Amino acid sequence: MILIPAHNEAATVGAIVREVRRRWGYRVVVIDDCSTDDTAEIARAAGATLLPLPLQLGAWGALQTGLRYAERNGYQLAVTLDADGQHEPAQIGALVAPVLAGQANVVIGAFPARASPARRLAWRYFRWLTGLDLEDITSGFRAYDERAIRLLASREATLLDYQDVGVLLTLHRHDLRVIEEPVPMQPRLQGVSRVFKSWWTVGNYMLQTSLLCLARVGHGRARDRRTDSDA
Image 1 (cartoon, rainbow, N blue to C red):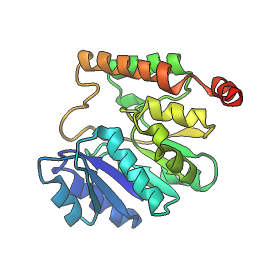
Image 2 (image 1 turned 90 degrees about the horizontal axis):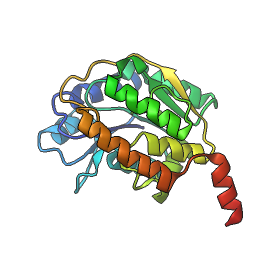
Image 3 (image 1 turned 90 degrees about the vertical axis):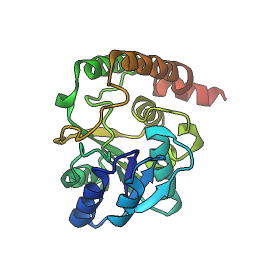
Image 4 (image 1 turned 120 degrees about the horizontal axis):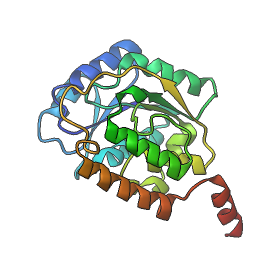
């Protein structure tokens, strides 16, 4: 199943849905995060299954809705990609192959060269804070196997807010193997990143995610195993 969260992406979502279906034939699910434009109608007309949200949940809330839908319908593999045209449908196979081969539970489509100075600063900081050995921490182009789908659809992952660091740390805590696969990406066709559009939003993002890392998700496996055994 291909999961595409979308908020006001009428200009691009139809072409993406059609391209995914043409190349791969996979079921495409668009999670409409309370768009005020024609995103929902265009996605449905392009052949997507539409999940309209009654409240705006943000990127991770929309994605988790899709993952829960995939779990409840028995899907063992889900690929997530953005609706803004950055992620190339042609690269879906590169993400799916390592999962099908049993080499990883999660594969991230990585393109570190896209990073602005603000994004590079955030990545460097979170690598230091979390110990995650990943180059492209914020990429939303990912493939998840059944175990990862089940974990991220659970209540444990509900209040992560941002889809990147909190999700990665949750996967790390449960010993799921996450690898990166280099892929090309296109410039965003419209709009700007809600996180990296200014230094103010970057600072707010880093503060909120730091608190999440320290207070809720934790630092790594060893600490979690001790906590589990003590409980």
